[in-house]
Length: 342
Image (cartoon, rainbow, N blue to C red; front, side, top):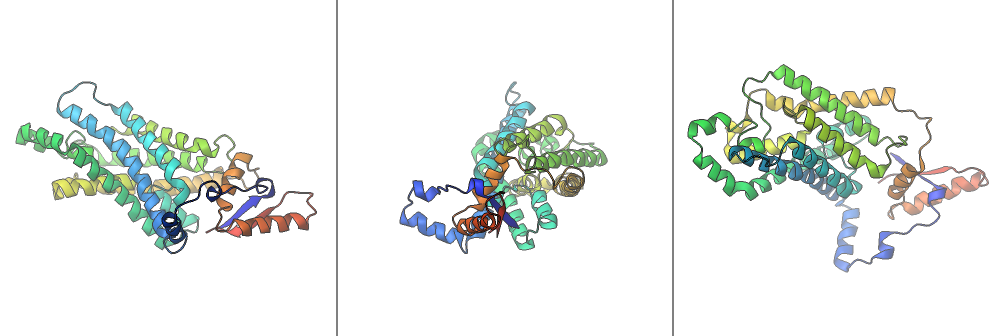
């Protein structure tokens, strides 16, 4: 993928290393991270981003579940859970996306493999890392709530516990995604597909560099609020919205409670897979109906792009290309230099 940089944004470059000198240990690691371990840093960022998202959201679900099981009024709510997931997304994008590109969802990675030239190997690494991040977050939350959950399970009558364990109202429902008994799987599928399509359209609109109304700094807030709206409106029917959240939580539930944690037959596949075709369809619709190659890229998006293109590892080549392009036209117009992005 060719990266470009404008001459207007390349006049004065100040690198992080110019302001803050790192110790030899960290500098040595950074050289490795920029070299043969670059893939590891990207995967770590993907795992950490999903960890932020799941840790924030499932943590709120945990206190809500404990409140319901202990009959405490006013302990968390769907409103709080929606805000918690939104804050988790905000943290994930703000902190981790600069290193990995900020997928944090297997369906986004699959779209990049299909339409953006991402290699299958890199995509597979991303997906495994995302699921691992969700799994670690859920297991840590269980560790933090373990004593409380064990006490609740000990005082509940066995029949009552068995009836609710693998539902949204049971202890396992804090981590795994389950349906209420009698739920219609067809309706759940439609709910999941439409909601995931809605979320994907918002994501693609936020990362569209020609979208003047969504500068890069506001994208995490817009995407986070879209997820909050989805949770507030449609989680009661059954909503995953992220395969890494679903599989990470389900694997955690399987680790803790065994094979019964799979839940209602058929729903596991709906929760884990439906967002993939929904996101692919949203990408196609957005590309066909909203992308316009003749639009002007606003300055804030050009600056955001240039910050990545002018990375010290290849910034000199970018500047040289930009200067060469400018000199060839006598400086009358601003042209763009190109370099293959690392």
